[in-house]
Length: 352
Image 1: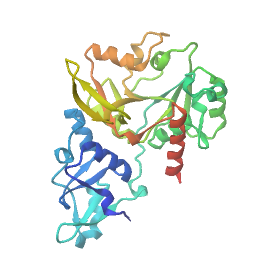
Image 2: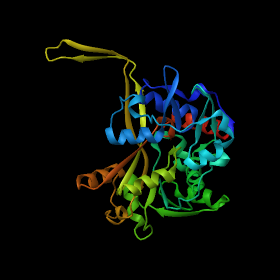
Image 3: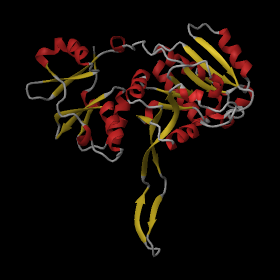
Image 4: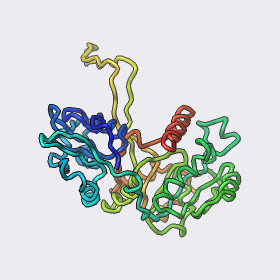
């Protein structure tokens, strides 16, 4: 078991939810311990925050609005029982308290002990047919799925992450430079299956699914070929099934600092309010979805449409569409050069 610096896990109950999400990203664990005037009083997890967002939709909340004030902990004298206690209650990080109820250390289950349960054997569809115009001129030579991030292409990174969770059946919808994509994956050693679906014309980020009719008859995951989602895919899948959605969209928090003073003007042209370099927080579509198979069957064949437009059509019909919120740090996008370079640095740090 590893010991980390306690202060990295502590957050004041008056902090905002956005600050808590940012700190959860920094410690790379799923829980923080809440203090009031330095005294341990509660715990807050990524799940607590997710449930709050889905119930309230309020990004201005404080930690004290969301936290669990009956947290799990263990005293120093019982520290030898920590591992068994954590496994019993599915706890990733457990505070160790002294007799004054101060946190003196935090016990973590190491990655080998936590592991990843290889139980998510569902089909994964990757939209790999686009022209990658935002990455020109790289994509004049290579199709976007083969753009290398470090030593392997982005599409292989995506597949490897799903494969760790037990996914073995992959469908690549291909068009632009498709033979290069097929040649690459046919040459590498792999213990999963890749099915190639050929687009004869560009069908957008959704229309290509119509080519899968009769090929997928169960809930599947759909992903763009230029993103990586650093989350528990099994948890996302279970969320989708438990809530009986037809489509669940994985959405990431995004924080943007406006580099200007923002002026609000009243009816008579008077200045009502000045906000100096305000920070905006909102959720945005990552390009990963969990989808029911009837979406495929109900698509018009060979009709170009983007997947968000498919979602809107079902929403207009009153169908259940879900959102699974994740933190900003959990979404990596390589759609542009600077983002691609940041993705490479992130992956190198994680692998190192």
